[in-house]
Image (cartoon, rainbow, N blue to C red; front, top):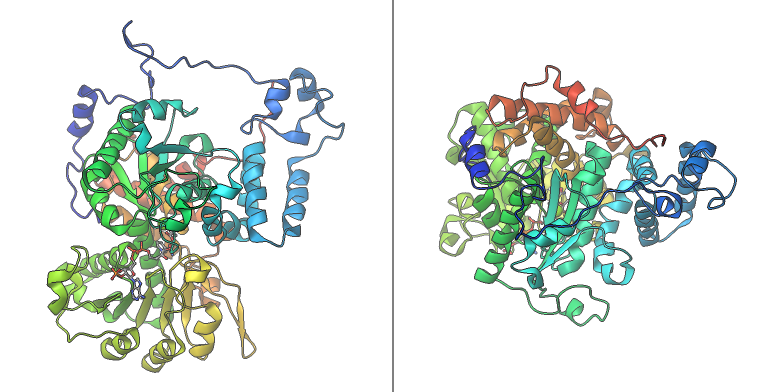
Length: 590
Ligand SMILES: NC(=O)C1=CN([C@@H]2O[C@H](COP(=O)(O)OP(=O)(O)OC[C@H]3O[C@@H](n4cnc5c(N)ncnc54)[C@H](OP(=O)(O)O)[C@@H]3O)[C@@H](O)[C@H]2O)C=CC1
Ligand SMILES: CC(=O)C(=O)O
Ligand SMILES: [Mg+2]
């Protein structure tokens, strides 16, 4: 995690980079004005769309909602049938159509088609029907979409930067039609959800995450840029798939990989400036930790799997205390999975306990235990552990199986972050229930097929006593006449509001205290009514309001830490965040 703040609050960082030529973002982004005669520039033109072109432009198309006046003014007569519909009626029709599809992937492709046809209507649907459509554009369906991306590929929805573009990445960025980019979500496709290496087909993830940035966090769609870095894939099935869309060779590693990433990070800063947020998504852990630590002192970077997941789980734990009692420091945590999500969450819990109790983080870590594919992480394994696991190697005899670890450690909280489904067996859940009146069980792995257990299993095996949340959604469960509503512990609660907070304050670096601020804000949004249903997260229906509160708390922390460049600080940050949010309602054209 980016726990040490290098250059924090030092505005000379900005000045230095300006001197070095990183002025991008606002003026003369493409250097057209400042270019000398011998320099190459991109011949950008701006034109007004009308007629057939307007109908084919997803940013401006309104389909049958074009008014009579607009049809006259924009050469649309005859190109549309006579009926004029409201956006509400269009939405009703599309939702009706979507519900006819029984295969989730068909809903996904229908939504992608809509996004490419009529962007505002796509976001209107997503915002107004978020609980229903989140599982379509996001986990679990996006996982299947990535697996089959080559077959369902229609039009590119983001930038593909492959090894073929080495030495030309800045030029490639300039090919993207939008200039004022505020958030980039980038993957190299090596750890897509819990589905493994999907290479170039991981593109579905940045596309999906960014659609949530807009729908849930209110970022303008044109300010969002999905990027997939293609260095090859080790997935034999894809390498042999005639429809595979990526480079057909094994992954580049070592220096070749590092150089491409370095060129990418430099080009992004040069093209878009200091304040573009780069969100790393679904990199394998051997690169993820390295990239985050390498670039956290020079770029505005955020790793969603390490940091966003940590923040959302901490929020769930803070609110769960209302149901299970005690302070965070009174609990004992056991993880199945000691990678990005597991160790990221563990570190943020330890940090929060340390802040609350004033005990050093080295001490508070001792309340947290992790199991990886080789068993419990203990001191005797330290020599062979990856660096991110080493802080969690406590004194204990070796334990191979999760069930034995549960019995030995006696945790109050069990967190699954292994990417392996069905690992919280009946015996494991029963052991948790025998140790705790209200065992807290989080099965974070995505998509649904990789969930450590289902909601039904958690409630049934604990005889209705578990407090349960999962990374991918589950329907409510009826157990012995009582309805249990499982929560969704997914970083989608955090990253849209977190990113909005960084952007509205003009943050130049991410700091762990901002993650804690996001957790507190999310936990504060859980109502008594939610607690009454056993929920530790608020429903997604209110997510825009929740995101505004998260953004405000994060921005407040950015200002407090002296890392804000948007000055003066707005007085009411919640109102300000809300006022910055994109609205999907149609605009009238002159
Ligand atoms: N709900 C949410 O918001 C989020 C969910 N996730 C999900 O979490 C999962 C893991 O992601 P991430 O942490 O990035 O992945 P990593 O690859 O970084 O970590 C996976 C960890 O699980 C361990 N593991 C694998 N198989 C087993 C097994 N059979 N028994 C015990 N441990 C095992 C690995 O052990 P070893 O190190 O020995 O190989 C490793 O420590 C994914 O499914 C992802 O979708 C991730 C981010 C957010
Ligand atoms: C949710 C998420 O980021 C993941 O599963 O990777
Ligand atoms: Mg992820």
